[in-house]
Image 1 (cartoon, rainbow, N blue to C red):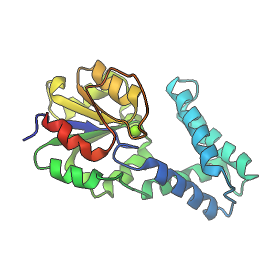
Image 2: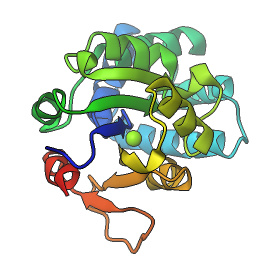
Image 3: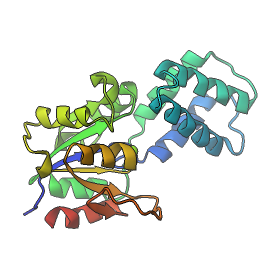
Image 4: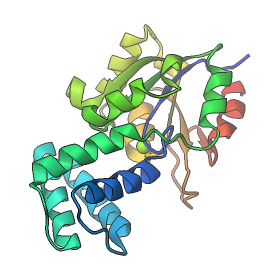
Length: 229
Ligand SMILES: [Mg+2]
């Protein structure tokens, strides 16, 4: 029925609406500690967070420094703190783990694919968020493996993490596996380097001249058509 029936998905902003979860978690956490959430907070947080993850990616900071600096920058933005950065960060991560908003068409598409396809997830997110969120999610039964970079000590785009996931799933030929993700460098180029087929979920409808992917979709539901051809 499908030309490709072995699929690996990225989690955040591919299956899960991370932007929405992040905004909700941040506001709830500030509320919990009786701190204000001033105008422009979410925009500020996103810009700062993207920059931090880029620094982490370039190995200029550690994950512990990321968590600390992120909290401290929020404290500065909201004008002070009623708690320490560790307590704040832990509460924020647990809030994040509680919200498992799926992106549009994800639930329907996965349930259609599930009887015909073997599926796995690779995420570069934090284990404390990814694990409980996945375990409480309605889509959990569809997946044979959840590979979390923090747990396996390697991260996308390292081809090794794709190789490790294929091993877990008993898939011997990467050419038969389709990788679906929103991050061009981590999801698409990483998988392409390992010899997998790739489907870029360009959910922000970016204009581009990237050429390393095999397929491109703008809405998750379009994946069904891609897998048939
Ligand atoms: Mg992503």
